[in-house]
Every structure is written in structure tokens, then in C-alpha cells.
Length: 551
Image 1 (cartoon, helix red, strand yellow):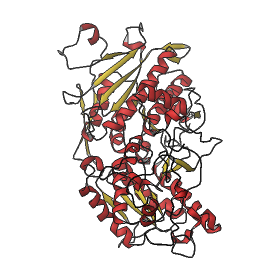
Image 2 (cartoon, rainbow, N blue to C red):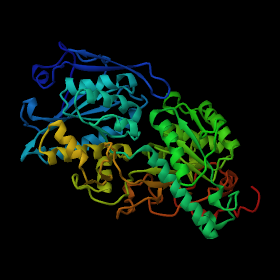
Image 3 (cartoon, one colour):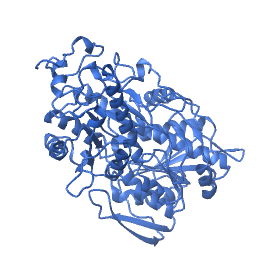
């Protein structure tokens, strides 16, 4: 794979390399400024013959191949991609690394096929990658550089709804289709007719999890042995179902705040009452997103403070609208408070692969067993069955390829979503037999593409309309259990040993949700008052406490 690093005119590029880089073109520049804590920003616009500014250190790459491809830029099909690749350790750097690894797999797949097929001709393919440096005020600038500076024909959005919200406005101004890879907020996708998203609408996350919990409560009510451990349930009302009362805590980002706001409505539609604030509105408390303040005891204390009003209102179904950092902090805050609602939901936390090392850690402030019993909705899992129509890959094959190409790292749904978005766009181009924006957009609108990631069919707003699963971390396991939501004839397969998060750990499998979750005292007793995790393979049934005594 060749790389071209584009720099301002006069920069240190050889003449041959400079001929590959596109020259800046005139266009409408959207400039983002004055962003608040919820990622709401001011946007100004101006027509200019120049591209908007980016810091000199910003990474821009043209990845081109296969070797011997025609030198003319006009022959390439170019996908632009926004990634937070610099500075290392910035808020979205970890997410972007996983996305970049998946894009490289897609690039290799297209190269092996000799390019993308357009009207019977294989066209060479390349990525134009521009870093937004995890800065919301650079998203539109980076998008303009990818399209008008590096010649992107189509765009793949970067991480988060908040960033994609503005990037999609710039791509629309440049009359370019954007496939959002990790944006689930409906208003981000529906804002124009050239933006599409491969994740389902954010309210579906909450709806899927709450409905699974309601089903578990009904099962517990129907037969005592379907309650976790067959012990007298902790439910306060006449039934577990009647004992459910939902409350919400959200990280202050676009995706998470909108998810909780809309999630309160779908929770009520599922028959679960929600706690109300003094104004009679759903009680939603907020905290700063962890990537802006880090995980510290001070941050955990902030979450504990935000949890107290929910606890005071008798919440028994706690919904956390979170990313990885806030989800981790929420679990530790609940542990320190000794508060165990009947069920706890997180989002984009348990399904993010980087959490697994911390789940096994016994260091200070480690999650250890704090994550157990937490449930989370997710669109994809490496154990999901089915072979992709365009990629010709299964989830296990994709996961193994990613692992081998990325030093043993396991891929999360974020990387899989970036790959799926690339497949969906490629499929639309090939079915349209054209690179014309209107024709490719029409092909996306009519898509019924089955991929290992999901069944990619877009609703009237351009957002994927697939079902979701529910995961749960269960005692004594280091891999998730899928407890609900597998549909459309798909199954969950046992992962090979080399694709598990720890050798000897539990295999991802389909199983019942453990409900209601036990108290922290009960969990401590099961751990023999030891704060670490169970050893892999240790039989928790041999060390459980009855629940009738005192720890």
C-alpha cells in the first residue's frame, strides 16, 4: 500500500508524489465554534477559493493501490474517512485506531478483487484519510480537506454523533454522500438526504434493553426458579414487573444525552414507569463525559452525586447513556455506593473491546466484578452468525483477520461498523453502476444488503433499521453472554479459543438474563470477601452464599 502525505504547496514532497495529491478547490466552508458541553455549536459559512485551515500537524493520507494502477487520479474511486489519529491519546484516538484497522481490511479486500466494479469495469480504489484531532471545531475543516483537497468521491463519518452532526453538513454542502459509521442520533442522519447511518436509531438501544429486562422480570414472576439463583426476589412490589421504575443518567454528549431523552419515552411505552423531576419530566441526571476529565476518584464521586437523586426516587431500573469511560465510572460508583438496582443498563461500554483488560484487573479503581450483571444493547458481536453478501465474510472470519493484522487486538462493534459502512457504500456504487451522487444515494435508499454486521436496510431518513441484541456480563466469565435479541434466523456461535478475551474464559453464548441482580453484599460473599475476580473456569455455584445469612 502506498501512502501520500499531502502538505501545503512548497512542502517537502517529491514531484511524483505531488501529482497524486488533489489541489484545493473553491467551495462553501462551514466553520464550527463556541461548542457547549452537549456538543451544540455555532456554525458560520463562507464561500472561499481556499480550504479552511487545519493545524500543520494534522495527518492527511492518500492510500492508493494496487501496484501498477493507472496514474490518473480520475480513474480512482476515493472514499474519504475522518479519524482522530492525532494526537496519540486524544479523546477519540482509541476508537479511531479500531476504525482504521477495519478500513485497512476493507482496502485489502477491494485490492484482492482488482477494484470496485462500475459498469463492467474494475476501478482502482483508495482512501483519503484526514484526522480531526478529536476536536469538534475541526470536523468540518477536515471533511472539506478530504473532499476538495484529496478528491474524496464519498465520505465515511468519524466517531460519535456529535462530530458526525457537523461533518455531515459539510459533506452535504459539497454535494457528497456520507456514510455515518458510529452515529446513532436520528437528527444527525435525517438532517439531509445525502447522509446515511449503519447504526440503528439511538432510542432503539434503550427500547431493546428495557424490553429484555421486562421479559426477565415476567419470567421471574412466572416461576421462582427463573429468578437468578431461585432465591426470593429482591423486588419490592407485588411482582418484579411492578417493581420496575426507570431513571436515567447521561454523559453530556450529543449521542448519550439525546439517547436518554428519547429513551425515557420508549421506556414508558414498554410499560415501565419513570422517575420524574420537580417539573414532572423524566428524571435525567448528567455528568461530564469521561474522556474529557479522565477516570479518577473525583470523577467517580461526581457520578455518585448524580446518582443520589435517582436513588432517592426509588429507581430500580437504572439506565446509563454512556460511552466507555462514563460506563466504567458508573459501575465503580454503584459499587462504592453499595447501591444495586434490580437491573443496570449501559451503552457503548461492555461492547467496547478495550474494557476487557480492566474487567480482569485487580488494581486500585479496577472494575473487577463491578461490571457483572450489567446489560447492554448492541447491534453486533463477534459470535453472530451469517456470511456477508458483499464481503463474503462471517463475523468470526472478520474478527480473526482484524486480530492478525492488528497485533492480536480484538475488534469491537466500532471497527465492524466502519467496515460495514464501507461495504454498504461499495455495494451501492456497484449496483448503481455509477459514481453520480443521486444514483448512488438511490441505490442506498433501496439497499437490502445482508452483511455479517447486520442486515443493512435504511429507513426513510437514511438510518439502518436492524434489530439489536442484549449482552450481559455474568459471574465467573470474561466474555459476554448474549441474553436477548438474536433474530432473523441468526444464531450466536461459540468463539474459537484464539478469539476470546482470555484463554480459558467463558465462551460467548446465548443464555437467559440473570435477573434481578444481587446486592453488593451478596456479591462480596460470593467472592469470599475478596475484591478480585473469579479465576477463569472457577465454578461460582460451589462458592455461592444462600442469601439468608449475613456477610
